[in-house]
Amino acid sequence: MSNENEFIVTPWEVKGKIDYERLIKDFGLQPLTNELLKRLEKNTGELHFFLKRKIFFAHRDLDWILDEYEKGNSFYLYTGRGPSGSTHIGHLIPWVFAKWLQEKFNAKLYFQITDDEKFLFKPELTLEEIKEFSYENILDIIAIGFDPNKTKIFMDTEYIKTLYKEAIKVAKKITFSTIKAVFGLNESSNIGEIFFTSLQSVPAFIESIKQGKNIPCLIPLAVDQDPHFRITRDVAPKLGFYKPAIIHSKFLPSLAGLDKMSSSAPQSCIFTIDKEEDVKKKIWNAFTGGRGNIEDQRKYGGNPDICTIYYYLYYFFEHDEKSLKEQYENCKSGRLLCGEHKMYLTKLIIDFLKNHQRNREKARNIIDKFILRD
Ligand code: TYM
Image 1 (cartoon, helix red, strand yellow):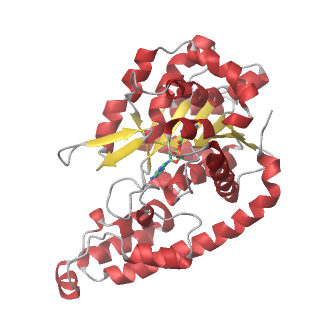
Image 2 (spheres, rainbow, N blue to C red):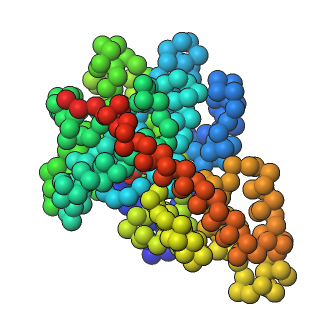
Image 3 (cartoon, rainbow, N blue to C red):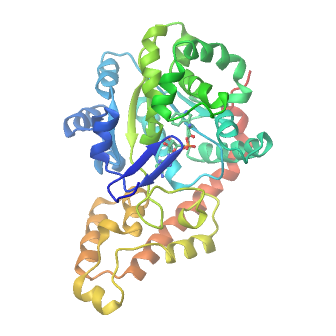
């Protein structure tokens, strides 16, 4: 990480300016090609802007999932959350996309809450605190609008009777040297950390176990979670299951610059529970691609390619392609000033959060419809 071309992407650390092309090569992913997008569109009738803008940019075996689907062999979805704090807008990207996939493919969804993971990997957190975050995060998940008849959410510690006997089958096929190589864990890592990936693997075949026959699984996630599923995909055939397919998103950057948004720097990300005042302050202080003063901005224009305001609109808040393009051009030409652009984004965020927070309150009454326990 000493020079600016270096970056780190692991499930526990994302740092630096990420080169997604290089990540495709380093991780051995397939790029999401226009041809594959056309095929998706044939099945869904339209493309989500996450796809049009290549925010979801890579995959593993998505073509196979579509082959199976077109043959009448439908798939289920699996995604998750590690409950170590409040939900931020970045987390919502794979979830909003999972909801879109659920609707378009009429797919069942398993949503794993890895409370065990956060307990094992975060020395400062107690199980009680994590339980509280789990509950709060589940409200955000339900607020997205998943179909209660097709969506099951479970916390690892509460669904462990079902999960454990499958997790040990996975664990038996993974060596410590694989874990060291994939995650960089070592002799001083606690032994729970070393075991954990076995539990994150299980939901990738849980529907096959329940139905007693192989059911394809598609996992929407941001690319930091891919290393777990590289292992899952190695193990799956050894246990007689299909390898899960994956679709990978990029990271919504931090408001402080183009690094990944992180809940450990609260001023640099928008949380779903933020109040209007928080949003105004955070957006006002955000890093932009603007010039030092209005005269220079009008004369030379700004740089949207490094601007977090533009990125927030691009990744999540501006759904209209034409308007987004105009904003890009108006910023570059100096017609649009940073202050105006910040006000525009602030309004979109506040409107979104009002609605999300309303749905979050309603979720308290229907949580039991979603939860799996054993
Ligand atoms: P967690 O809680 O770190 O993240 C939840 C989901 O959000 C994605 N993500 C982001 N996406 C876009 N922009 C960002 N800035 C950003 N930050 C995080 C993550 O990739 C993830 O998809 N171990 C997992 C929980 C888990 C899981 C899964 C995730 C269990 N099973 C299956 C995905 C798929 C975790 O701690 O995620």
